[in-house]
Length: 210
Image (tube, rainbow, N blue to C red):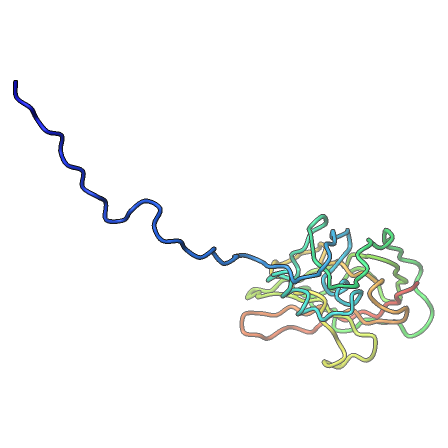
């Protein structure tokens, strides 16, 4: 009877249960400590929420890791800085009344590629309302909606949102009057082409009411 020995075991180069490694660093969006959860409501915009919470638009977008500020949707979770009122505002309504008397007008709205069709000059608006019109260009890059509560100079306007899809006879965006004090405002549409130029900027004067 011949005895055949078992083959010898060769230890592996890397033993089981090797050296301990550090805990992996967290990845993704890290919410700032102490910030409170808020559920985005219909009609909310980052700009309006930033004004409501007393924070800059850039800081709010950065803290929530938001790259496209126009791409926020109802039901999405957002985080607000400590001390912010995260109770949803009362349901906003959109009311367009007969134009008020006074110097309410529009200008530079003759281009078919950049025009606001609603609201009309002198409309009285409350809560969240939609802006309708057309924003197209053969070399389209983006369009933006701006608001001014003062004059119509370039430095008077603040950009609410920029959008990167063309619109033809449809909804350009929404504005929530709750982010502003009551008064008269200019709404401006700018369509920008791939060279950074733009046709005349359609500008309409309306009133934000309480």
